[in-house]
Length: 114
Image 1 (cartoon, one colour):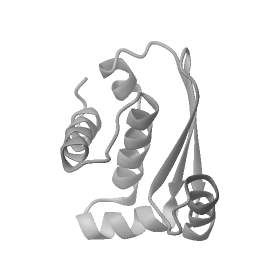
Image 2 (cartoon, helix red, strand yellow):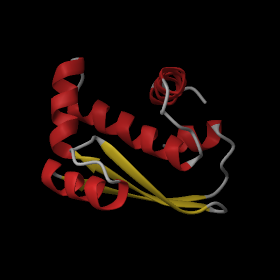
Image 3 (cartoon, helix red, strand yellow):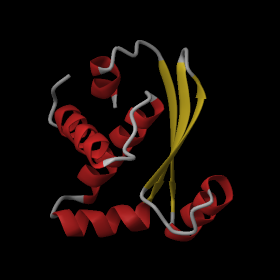
C-alpha cells in the first residue's frame, strides 16, 4: 500500500484494514450498498486530506480467489488491500475499462513499482 500511496502522490494516509468473513461482509454490503451478496472488498473513505479510510476484506472470498488465480493467500490479500486503497484514492471499477486500469495499477504496485 505504501507503493500505491507513493505512486498516486498521496503523502499522508491513515487506512485501517479490517478482515471479515463472507457472512459479515455480505451484511455490510447489503446494509451500506444495497447489494445482497458477499464481495471481496468494501471501502469507506472518511477524509480526503490526509487520506483516511477503512478497507474491509473478506478472508473467505480472498481464499477462494487465491485458489482461482493460483496465487498465495498473502498475495491475494495484498492485492485486495491495494485495490481498496486505490478506491479510497478515487479510482473506480464500474466499467470494464476502469477495472482494467485498476488491475494494471494493482499489478504495478504489488510488483514493486511506483
